[in-house]
Image (cartoon, rainbow, N blue to C red; front, side, top):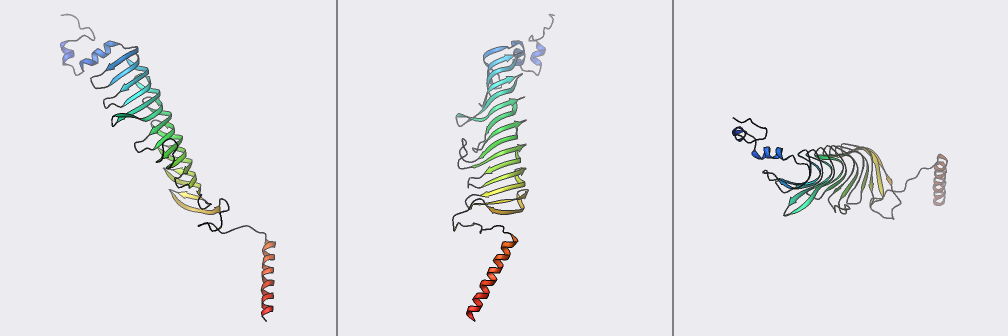
Length: 253
């Protein structure tokens, strides 16, 4: 009986649970650039190989027609790359940026199904660090939507950040778990007023209002004039008011 050479098709290999293509793939010893390689799973890859692994530049089209174009390292998306989703007969970008060990890590831009976007830092596939998110509005500049610039932690607004609302109002301050939390300032730009205060889990706990600038006369919601004066001036004003009152009484009598 001839000896069994590793990789040779035998009765045992036919009866094994491994697919036949698996043994052929091992024997191929792919290295360097290759034309399109197809798998029976429905995926196909064109690009660089090293030691039978995707390594270097390459494009893979998945079974559902989504595709990834970019850098690879030992069969994993690693480096710069773009993930495309195949929807309604055309490709749309889902994520463009840096990858590490097959998931987003570093700087990258994410495009959500509802049109929201995020551009900034990623750690292990989650928005973490400094970034800019647009909720609604135009993806390019955020016109017509809310825009947040600041810090994230595990996909939530956490730390210092500024939210510019579509209404024109602005909040600058601390965030935690996607809620205003800590010291902050809310600007009512249309009224020309600001509120400096403390928020706990999205709710105001204490604070005070002030004018941002002197609003035009008759502006709805404008605060009345308010200024600090010295004790001497207060006394002088009181004496004058008392004198005027006495003079008025004398005229009447």
